[in-house]
Image (tube, rainbow, N blue to C red; front, side, top):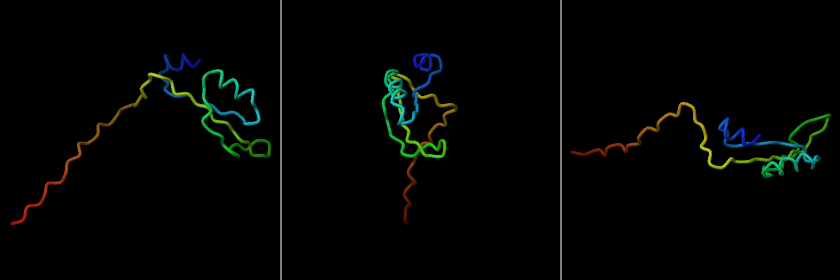
Length: 85
């Protein structure tokens, strides 16, 4: 699935979340090549209580981000110095 996302869809980054109390889900993400990037404390409200989440991510190598309709940067010019007479 990651290979398809990279090659066919041109995706440059994948992120995923799982409940911190679910180590099996975390192992699945790690086996898929994702790295743990964060621990989100009391981030999700479920069944009347707040749950901690683990954040996983993977930057796909060799991909350039797709920018739709990029706007060229304006050339910055210095204001001309004033001359005094």
